Image (cartoon, rainbow, N blue to C red; front, side, top):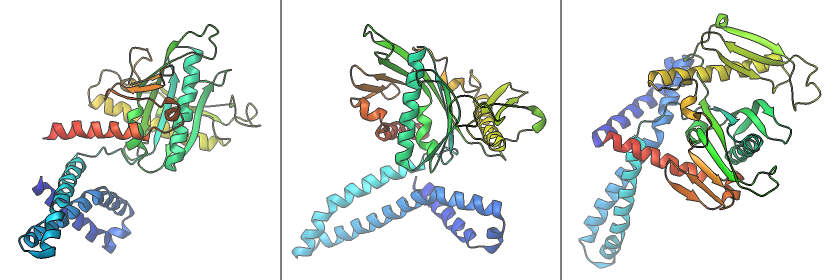
Length: 353
């Protein structure tokens, strides 16, 4: 591990030198790549240097502890704390050495769809959208709805939105999958508990260089917006539907009043879906076009269960439960996301050892 960390620090130093090179600064593409590579190594190098500092402090404390008097006594008292800090820093270094997902720093498109459960599933889709919106607000992220299919009871058969901010995909990627809810629906008069399911897909925003779309492969349809959206709804042909002819992927956007803005947003979603499809094919996954994330929407396929009568939310991937469901649905999901990230990193670290 230490040889690898030495190489990382040397590369970080070379990147710092390159950032001061006028030839690289003048080449915007190369400069952006260098800045990105430098930023990705910053935390790891800081941890390496902190570890080295702690090692020196521990060596000094041990040397001083050999002497007598008050200084020797103080040094002996410091040694356990320094040893504990050193061990903690080593764990941090191991975690930071886990290969980083190249999409972690990207914005995302989130697609929520009602699965099994009819109107109750649509209502829960709306609840999840609200939950993610509140979490995003707390993170200082920006949420913009691209397309939605609302129901008469303020639910959503489908809603697609973009989340923009720092490290969005790194946090939200664990939300992809089937979310199961157990509760008494608003539409249930007898008070019986129903089980419904909602699917969530989380797609990192694609780099246009990585996913080039031939305009000849895309059919563009323009139509009137429908549903909530202001006075221009059903009066202006601003909504855009893109159909990627080679794959059959269909994307539409009607959130903006500008046809051009809707087309730009729809193209970004199309690129994200194409990128996901390409990655799935490369990994030889059986289900293409995001099915690896969302499955069929059946109750039996689930990553998480929201049990309202028991005030419990359980993530089945790490077998972890919380008993503060109301707080969780109000957007306080960060603690669980951190546990999912830690479990993911532990699994990756174990596979590299």
